Image (cartoon, rainbow, N blue to C red; front, top):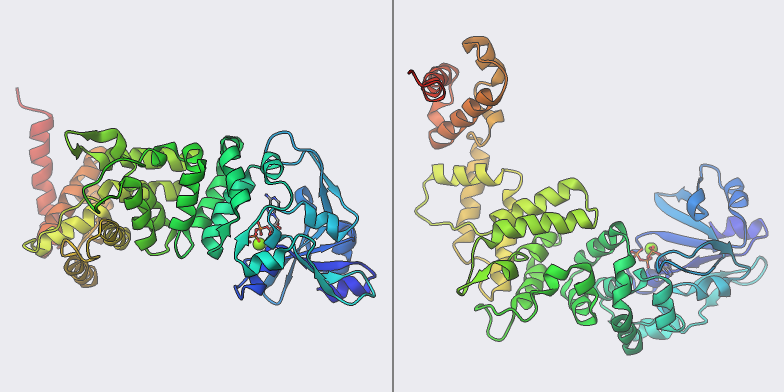
Length: 440
Ligand code: ATP
Ligand code: MG
């Protein structure tokens, strides 16, 4: 890629996060190149490239990897704490590096045409990399004032790379955290999801809380600080939350549910209890995720997990009770719910298995494997049968009958037979008609 540009008499460099990751022996998420060639020229040099006009970036796929090639840039003035008012082409690699966020992200490797490729590191990125430090390029107050997302990127990168934030940079986040209120939900969401994918998200979450960013981005979570818990001696509800997040497997939905599972507690606290915090919390979780424009399906799944996270299992449950549990939670969600509860246990200083969780898990697996009825779709009849055989109209009653039949079969799998179910359905309809149209 670089050679193609050099041969065409253009300067070309590998730049930014991918170089940082390569030096850290991490697999880069994406490869960024920068050049003095204008986008149209780059596009002409690479067949099959795509020009994303909005960002002035040409995207090239090469041997399964994706390369983004951007002309040197310099940022013009900022007025909304988010985007520069315009992006201008710069004239040198040094100018391009000076607009980048952190010193470890402001290194390049490459050259002008004809020169020997070399490291370009005007801001001491390699030293900071060795010390595992995130340090703003230039004056941190100014840089965060230009683009508030850089503060969120700092805490996200600290968690993802297991770096510390250099004290001067961290203090500046504290002074400027209020500017995060100007950020769009989408950008916060993208950073939060990357933060939650880290080995130990607690590193970034604690930085967010301590710097004041959390109070701006997720005020309901910030209110967990200082709220007592009779779980781990000397720890508050926020401590419990971050422990739970770290203990959760790194699946997006489970980590988000762990972060939000007790979000309803501060509002429901009375007489030493958190009455109905799971249903209040499910609403709040949905509201928070809608606010940061998380995908709708993710909002629903997380809210669902929060709503159900307080289940109590007893070893004396019958198999039918296990099936009812699966039916209530949903066969596709039960794994995530058990993982959330195991993490919640660990966050409470208990063994992951507390509440006979492993036993429940194996019983759930056995039921799922047995293919016994867990939902309407496995019923031996469907809505069409009821319409054809019993002349039932489409609508609410039809759905209710199917649900009732499913409940019966979940309790007693032997009933899952076409003739039996049609008989049961006839009975149900007669009963229901009596209820709904009482004979006067
Ligand atoms: P990731 O591992 O998620 O890809 P990254 O640091 O590479 O992390 P990208 O979004 O790929 O993040 O950005 C690539 C590079 O662009 C960064 O390394 C940095 O040099 C620069 N950059 C990204 N966002 C900003 C910003 N808000 N302000 C200044 N420079 C930025
Ligand atoms: Mg990157």
